[in-house]
Amino acid sequence: MAPGVDVAVASGGGRMVVTMDRYGTDWGVVAAGWRAHVAGDTEATATFSSAAAAVEAAYAEGLTDQHIPPFVVVDGDGRPVGRMADGDAVVLWNYRGDRAVEMARALDTPAGGEWPHFDRHTVPRLRFAGMTVYDEEAGVPAAALVPPVSVEQPVGAVVAAAGLTRLCVAEAKKYGHLCYFFNGHRDTPFDPALERYVKVRSLPGRDENHPAMATAAVVERVLDAVHGRDGPTPDLLCINLANGDMCGHTGVLDAAVAGMEAVDAAVSRLLAAVVGAGGVAVVTADHGNVEQMAVLDEAGVVVPGDTPGMWTPLTSHTTATVPLWVVGGTPVGEMAIDEGARWDAATPGGDSTCQGPGLANVSAAVLHLLGLEAPDGYLPSVLVKANKGV
Image (cartoon, rainbow, N blue to C red; front, side, top):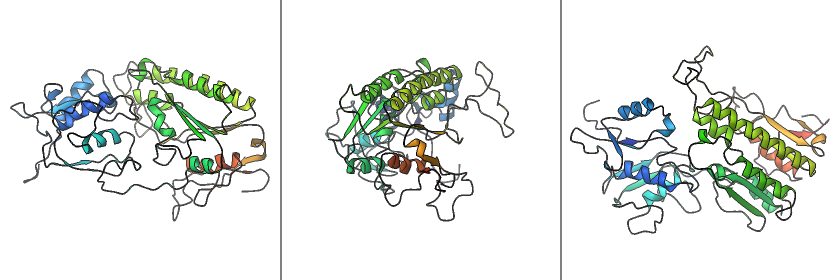
């Protein structure tokens, strides 16, 4: 360490069990983070002489990074090296709001303020800032290093302005992807009279232990809507099936296979219902994950590891291209894929790595399928009228 530099990792843990809960699924995860990071609670939290020692201990128990239990780093006398105290400057550097906003609320709410989620015990008076504003509507956190990116006229706003109805269904672990993210960092409806959001309860415990997750329950709610058993059929249904991402993160191949089998069964039922009702289904993903479960070296060879198959699990997203299926009768039969659409169309000079249309080109396509014009500023639709060129 350079002279005059005093720095150390003071605490930590994996995102699935420490600090980074999302959508209010389990505030106990945030409480564990508070005890480790803020309170430096050495009675309620495991202690280690270094972060490396904590990680090595977790690996020895067969845990992957995202499930490392909370830990506190202590000095030779057993005292926490980084307990937060009055006057400390704290920066929450996470730029993604869904997994940062709950801890930001905990750090932003002063002692004596309304806080029903867990007992924080002693609350230090901190100089706290987030990397950006994680909840623009509530102004959380109050101080941020970078202003939030304004998302103008997301699909939900355009659909609501046109007087069309929308239903969003997802299990709790991915619920915010259909409101907070899909609505441009907004948790509330654009028009409550036209929009409904259904949060299906996620199963407790780790996803590798129940890889089908709550997929069947999500499908049932959607089928009720498609068949009019839950009121008039919405004009737009937004659905998230979480298995491919969440089971991919486990690093457990059997769980990944079982999870995708559940998705296959779900998509089969959903497509039959939507197309049978005269609708159009747009099926895609925002990134890869489950299609590669092992770490590969530069030559594309599986890296040996300690899984039952003797390979090293890959628990992160991939950069693989994702498919897009548009399934239905009219107007799909009148449309063609615009191979000239590019997801970097708004980037000066383009991107040499771009291979064609991407997720950003789907928004305009969804609006076109609903009979709506895409607002100015949208990237070109991946769908165009057939036989009219590109």
